[in-house]
Image (cartoon, rainbow, N blue to C red; front, side):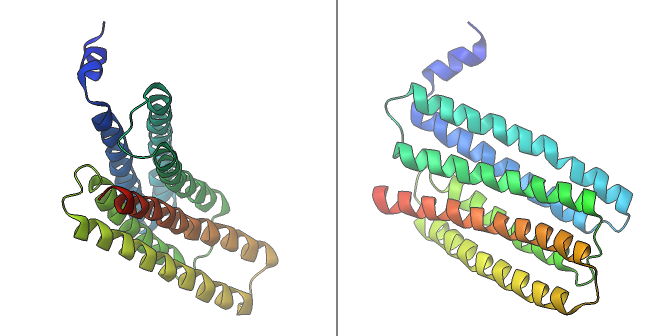
Amino acid sequence: MAIDSVLKFFLPKDKVFYNLFEEVATTLVEMGNVFKKAIHETDISKRNVILKLLEGYEQKNDEITHKIFVELGLNFITPFDREDIHYLATSLDDIADFIWGASKRIINYNIDDQYNTLPAFAEIIVKSIHSINTSVYGLRNMRDLKSTIEACILINSLENAADDLLDSTMLKLFSANITAVELIKQKDIYQMLETVTDKCEDAANVVESIIIKYS
């Protein structure tokens, strides 16, 4: 039997889930930081190279999410409701999926981000993901509920800011002298980035639900 299998056998099942969720949260922070770095890169070719790195992070999170679902199927006893585990895992995975999806469109569409909407979204997303990280790590012991709840509240506030950013940008675009194709491309990217913050809010809502049930 491989050493990692032996260690896993003796590892309490609640810790298995916490470890996997924390690994996902850490990977999301790395994705957010890479995305922000890429958006602030002025050389388009270099920016695209950095954005393509996000595919690896997205695939890594897919693998961890799969492990969570496998553990969910194998273990009768879980640290909190099975539905909450499934919903939290799905929400966190969606964050990675939409970041990578938006990144692919930025690479392929080569838009003219004349209102600097991309850096603004990158800033909101990074803050949201760091708050997700705080809230997920707070689940293990639930000793600092104040910080965990504050992180969830901040995520909700950031989602509202992303909504406002999308609305204001679309108003500007509809009034601008751009082609219909360019409008559609930009709308697609910005809506996908706003969805990233929606998924962060979904994950925060699950964390809040878990806290209410088990704190």
